[in-house]
Length: 114
Image (cartoon, rainbow, N blue to C red; front, side, top):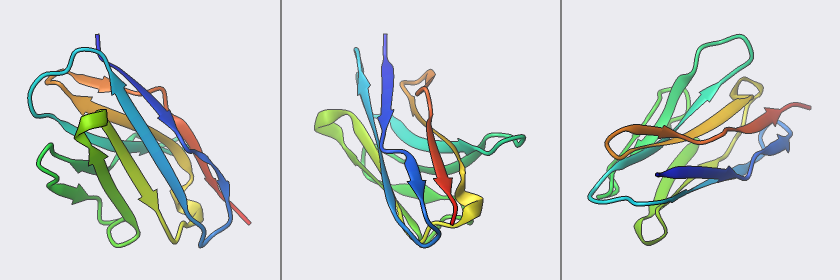
């Protein structure tokens, strides 16, 4: 059974940076996509970014140029470097992987406020 554990959330002022990490454990075989969604209070969960085993990346328009997704296949881990954070980036961030069933992490809170 695959499980995801996230870390790295917290509070930061506008313009600041945070780095989220997510590690997958369990039996994982073959190439798979990992990525991040986020959900602000009272809103639907929205796509943030994803990366394939071959390091091909995609981003939501709202974060492109500010966020960078990366992964370490040897550690079954994915990272999200978030720079130039804005108050509208405040949300619970969820890591996911498709193996091929979609597995979700427990979520980590990111708060951007002055």
